Image (tube, rainbow over all chains, first blue to last red; front, side, top):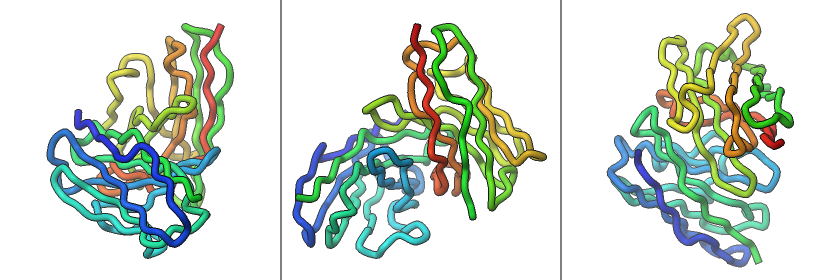
Length: 109
Length: 119
């Protein structure tokens, strides 16, 4: 099973700042099958990015994904208060052994 | 409106059983891979099981293999998870989710249903 590690554990930033979240895989992710989700308290996760860099339907363009192989990044270019959430990466290249990272909590000061 | 609505969660004793349901609307369940994903209180997300669009491919996480059974009723456009021999480690919110890209990335999620295993 591919193990995903996310850093930092918590990110505390101000509105308008840029957030950079990292996701590292224990082995190469096939075809860059890597997704990113946002989860707010008491809510289900929401898909932001799939295939490492493709925005899901309805996701604002301030969210972008990049990376390949074992290193991936989610960037939020201009933080807004509603971006306060936990962000998870997930690999789906080693089907059916899908795995999620432990999450990065983003606090907006 | 495309949505998933789970039901069937609750409090169950260790060793007991529970059946979760997930009703789909706005799309046809059998056109997609469908998964169950769970989240223990205060913890991260763990994939549990999926069923392919054809129904011919079914997989489980090692932690639930032999105890949980995923199924689908095309006439009711619904997904199910039969959970047997439950332990405290199965306590979690259970989400059903629609899969894209061969089933592995989840674009539509239900609101979740809480399962608590406790004596």
